[in-house]
Image (cartoon, rainbow, N blue to C red):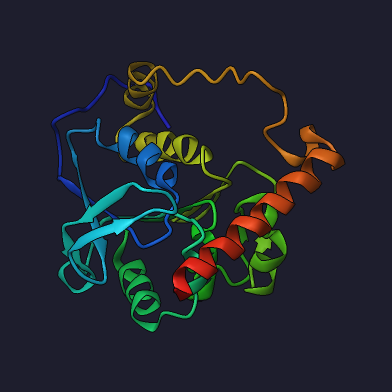
Length: 231
């Protein structure tokens, strides 16, 4: 990556497709959206099985403005994660769309458990990738090679670890599709200067007791989501 002056306003407008679905984790896509939407050579489209509103695991509704068949060749794909990814791992329509758009994309990316969907579509076979720390084993069972890195790039595939790491991934992606200076301007504009109040943002830092409590929380929330989905 270079240190040129920002190239805002030049070149092709890149279409970034962000799939959304019931049970998506909001920050998984809002973080990358905030970064990429700052770039004037990017147009973001929220896509799903059909246009309409989709609710995250809480009470926030997000509108998909296009269906999968209306977005056949996005330049970039950003697949978020969330509890709803488990159902999508067996969704033929969604997985076939991922395979199709990956054939022509400049970059195919994921955040958190979105990498499970890339793996389920067969896109991560034999590749290093990351995901939420609680899902390393599942990611491995789908043919990928899990790593603890916050952002992993394998050719045109970029995966990010849990939730907030989507911002890191998007800044790296911004540098790739513009230049490093532009990405730095965006980082400064959104004042992304993490100074967390607690030093426990990864399993290695948190220690076994806190990891066990967090894992139990993940299990509890997953069951609650499944129960709600079956009502």
